Length: 163
Image (cartoon, rainbow, N blue to C red):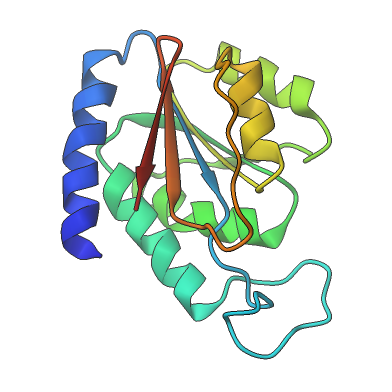
């Protein structure tokens, strides 16, 4: 997983540095939930923390994007999105901005007015909606067990990577 993360980082940094004036939007679904069927016993909480695997994935995301010139990080109100963003936010010294998962227009406004590159940490249903509203016609779907997608939107183009 670490070697793959390095390869992805090299590709992403090349993209980010080449179009920094335009702004690059990085999008991920939150990392694995503690109540995921693959993570062990089910939790009853409506807002679960990340699982151990999810914590590792959040750290991998921070490693992959640490040099991507991220200037803003947006999450939803749920712990799992905040916990996914936390390692990168801490490494970069960036305050995470929470936007309601139901406020897609508000999030899009923030993305469009943010200088530099941004990271969006959302959900399997919100990430595809944001990608669509950023002008990408190709439909995107995220399967329930998929937590390793890293979407990059730049100059009207979508790149889908795995981390």
